[in-house]
Length: 145
Ligand SMILES: [Zn+2]
Image (cartoon, protein in one colour):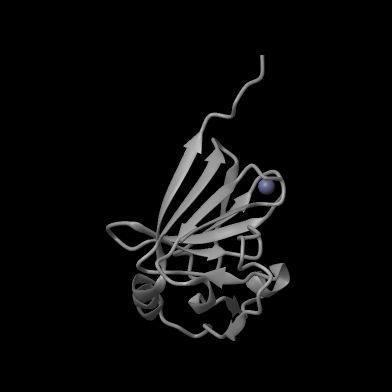
């Protein structure tokens, strides 16, 4: 199943592919201040795939806390799109289904999760098992005339 979404202004586009039926996909609400202040509801599928497409230069990276993660924000509308980590061989991500208004999922209730206090290694290992392989595609903005 392929689910599409986009940030509020529409310039960052999302495709999330999962083999799971829609009603078996779980949304999580991380309880850190960054996620709570944005109403983030995240979705992952380690057997799925995520594609983030944006015009060149329109994705901003924000780092905080353990600084092992890039939080991708739309430069235009400020939407928190996804958190991305390099696990050594590939990039993996958790998608903010609420921010990207992911079809069929974004208005669903999310399960609160408390992740504070994890060590760096525990955090990396949990993500390796749970996060979604991601491809980030940037292209020059289309010019008119
Ligand atoms: Zn945007």
